[in-house]
Length: 196
Image 1 (cartoon, rainbow, N blue to C red):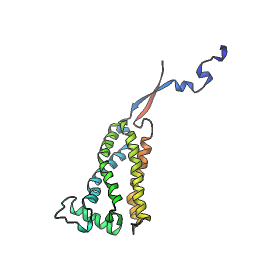
Image 2 (cartoon, rainbow, N blue to C red):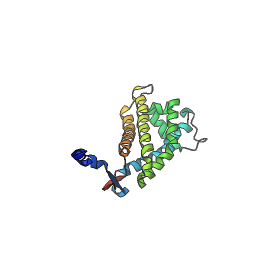
Image 3 (cartoon, one colour):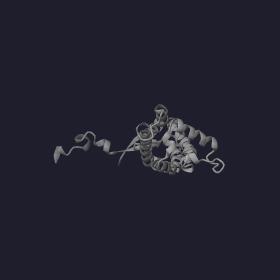
Image 4 (tube, rainbow, N blue to C red):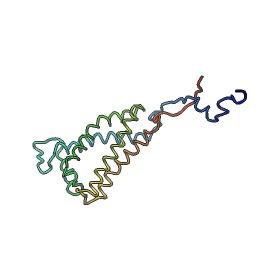
C-alpha cells in the first residue's frame, strides 16, 4: 500500500479520539449543590403524596366526609383541601375516575421517589433511566390535570392560583429529565486513558 498506508490519525484527524477511553470520577454531593433541589423536591413530594394525594382516594365523596369515622388524613388537612377545592380547584372535589387513577399511579411511584432521592445523594447512575421516565410522566400528567383546570369541564375560577400550584411540578419533571439525560450524570471526565 506504500505511502497511502499512513497512520489512522493522519488519514482521519479525529480517529485518535476514538482510540481513547474516558476515565471518570464520581462527583460528591458536596460539589453537586443543585442536586439538593431534586432531593428536597422528591422528599417533600413523598410527604405530600402520603397526605394530600391519599385523601383523594380515602375520601372519594367529599360531601359524605365524616371525620369521626375517618381519622386519617387529619381533619384539618381534609377541610383545607375541600375549602381549596370549593374556592379554586373544582377538579379536586369532583374526582372523576381518570383523576383518581392518575393519583393512584402517583402514589404507587412514592417508593421510586424515595429511591431516587437516595440515588441523588449517593450519585448512583441506576436511577438515570427510571428517573428520565418518571420525570417525563410527571410533567405529562401535570399538564393533563392543569389543562382540565384551565379549559376542561372543571375550569378553575382562579386560574392564576392553579397555574402557580402546578407549574413547579411541570418544571421539576422537565429539569429532572435534563439533569439525568447525560451519559454519566454523576461523574466527570478526569484523564483520558489511551488504549493499548
